[in-house]
Length: 138
Image (tube, rainbow, N blue to C red; front, side, top):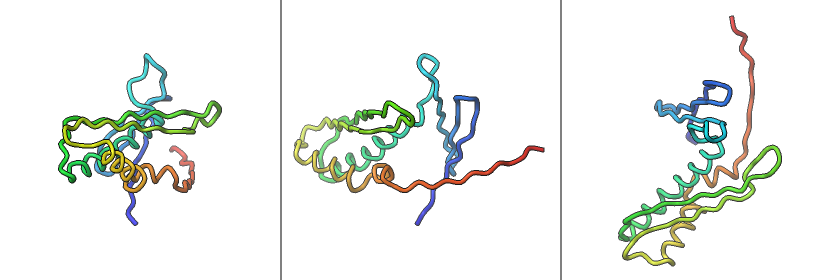
């Protein structure tokens, strides 16, 4: 079993920075528009899901020798009205621009990508554990 690690560091009350083991940085904020300068954690979850499912879908279409002129996925999440405001439903709309692909084959590829290969989609079903500690400053 492999592990991944990310450190999320507070920068201000509503601003955070996430850094992975390779030093790649993602800014996060919980501001409302127009003060928003980065994605919120819930935005990032949708982005991660869309990105994860996209990679496999595009690669599978190319493996089938289909020309990919353009590709994008629109990800929409419906959130619970209360606290926590978790996603009750997430919808992904995959759009492929290709002169030689069919709806049927693309639909099958999308299903495989989301249901079988996307680690983020599978992770949304995973068990979450946690711990906490307080360090005293000197």
